[in-house]
Length: 318
Length: 318
Image 1 (spheres, rainbow over the protein chains, first blue to last red):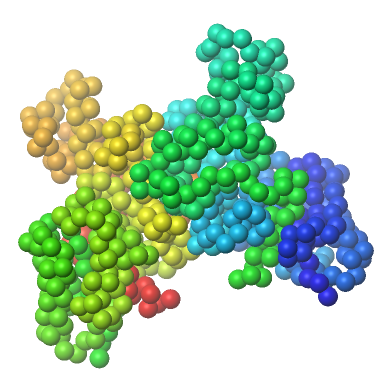
Image 2 (cartoon, chains in turn yellow, orange; image 1 turned 90 degrees about the vertical axis):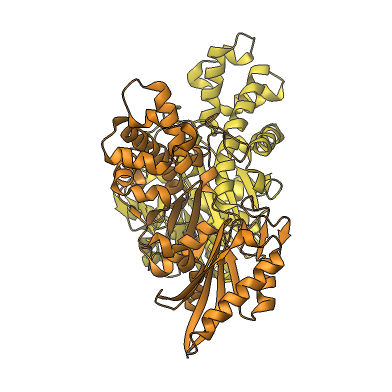
């Protein structure tokens, strides 16, 4: 019998599931429409049905555990709490509920930690004991590994680098404070930077012809790829601010590498090169040339499932 | 035979040594004038003579290890590198050199990490798995414990919170950059804040009568204790900036407690109360009421020796 892990990524709109082997190969996958289930009990029953269906089609495989990435998931308690993007409210004992349907070990954590775990088990961080993954999506999430262990902290919620303040009295943040890293270094942060530069600069830009409410980070990256000067400046500004967050993180935990992942990281070298340049300019001298900054090597479309399954594979390898 | 550890705190001017038992009782102590030894080999011979002298006076005790706190010490390598406050230059294989004189396990780390280790083994952090000690002296050092382990990172130099940038383009820092936390939240930072406020404000203050080059943080704390308004404002300003550094650290590692230690922490509640107030105002909501901010409970005059010895006692307790 071949051992297999179910990786589940619970999203506000869609939930992805897959059967992942120890080498990171996905043998089956399914999608559930999260919003079809206003009641979390029904959702969990649907999850179990999907997992069992995939297992039925792979009779030579034994399920050894379930790994789950979900918004605001608490690793210690196996709960989801106050997740803004999910319709289920209150404190949900999610892992226990899944275990009642399928009796195997169930581990869960938030999306960014799952991404970091995926990087450690299947990606560019293999063999590393100290690294950080920054997920540059709508917000900025972070998964931090120290001494080979995911950093959860006293509360289970450690690793909120998106909410380290890098500009005192800076941009309004969804957390109610000002100047958080994610208000600059994220897909939405990039769009805000374009609007700021449109107000400051006089030059032509294709981005002047787009309704602000419809502007996306992808449009900005495309404009930058076409040498639109304002878009290029927005990428540079974003990289500068991201570098400020990264050098403070380097001073905290002195990692071997920082990996960039998610929507904004799809801009590739257009983001990576200026980030490296600014980090090199800003880093504390003692840490110069002690770390690498890389794009994640996990394919984005599989990352969520792989990362979730890696939670379980990681426990097996300890 | 009772087991005993030698704790050594190597300072630029004086080096303190003591024999410390498992309960943190200091059975003997000595002081060596560091500057009397321009050659590190002679210094280490003097250390060995002192340790052996103390052991000779305590025949019922067995030395099980030597713990050393020293500027720029690298835990992994047992070396001292490029320490600005020491006369010995280059890369010194300090732990190996000590071990050649006295053949027991020798562990070393920097002063701030030793303080954190002392807090964990003998002080207010007993039983805690996640906490941070900030040493507020001439600069700001930090010792960070995560999952019960001292944070050294990939390089051995992790935990440089004094050099997290909290004010972009802020005050010049000795590291060559600008706006580092220690330029505000340290003994020298407090003095700089007084000079800044003397330039900004018009009110009377006893601090106007002191030559700037002779102004010390102790004078400022005393003036504040006497209700000098400018001195009080300087304490408040310092607390505000320290809180900015603390809330970013909370977002990173979500510790159970942050301990304040060293010269500036001697101001006691005059510093602690405004720090707590500002941290409460600035902290990310998810971390509200999940941590404590306390003064260190280790007596300052013994802290260096206790902390250094705790390096060894910690290994024994694993």
